[in-house]
Length: 135
Image (cartoon, rainbow, N blue to C red; front, side, top):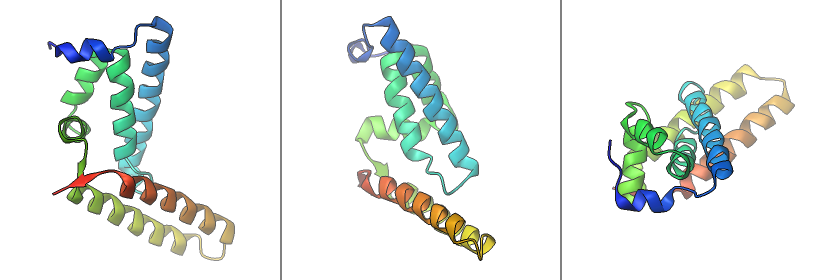
C-alpha cells in the first residue's frame, strides 16, 4: 500500500525513536483491545495513540491499523476529520456508565474498590469527553 508524501515527513528519522514509537503503539493497541472487552476502559483514545505512534514508526504498521476491521474506521475518521462522531462518544460513555453501575453493585460493601472503579471511569469519561466531536 503506497503512502502519501506527507507520511514520509511524519516518519521519525531516528531508528531508536521509531522503535520506541512502535513499542508505544503496540502497548496502546493492546490497551485498546482490552477496552473492547472491558467497557470501563475507553478504546478510542488508545486507538488514536496507537495510530499516532505507528505513523511515526512504521508505514506497514500504520497501514495495517487503518485496514483493521475493528480499529481502522475510528482511526481513519480521526485522520480525516480530527474528531470522533457523537455516536462513538455516546456508545463509549454509555458502556462506561453501565460497567460502573455493575461494578459498584458487584463491589457492594467494598468502598476502596468502588472508589477505584469510579475514579477509573471518571478518568476515561473525561478523556472521551475532551475529544473533539462532530455530527
